[in-house]
Image (cartoon, rainbow, N blue to C red; front, side):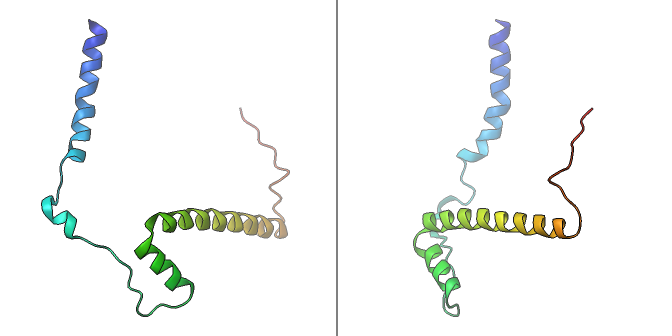
Length: 98
């Protein structure tokens, strides 16, 4: 009986936290909102990504993940190269934990 009481008491805060998810803050007005990128003055790669954002949001998200990971790798290798050139060799560092 004690375990059942603890489980029920744990469900109360969870249900209170999930309550705003079930409510719509904007009501019927939320269906009228459209977010688009303005492509009138952009050219080149920026126009491609703007059109991709307007037409296929899933492909835009995939490109965003791929480019973020690629830029992170490039910056990591670049900083490693710069640190090595300045004399800080982080590859031979010994980590001592007590």
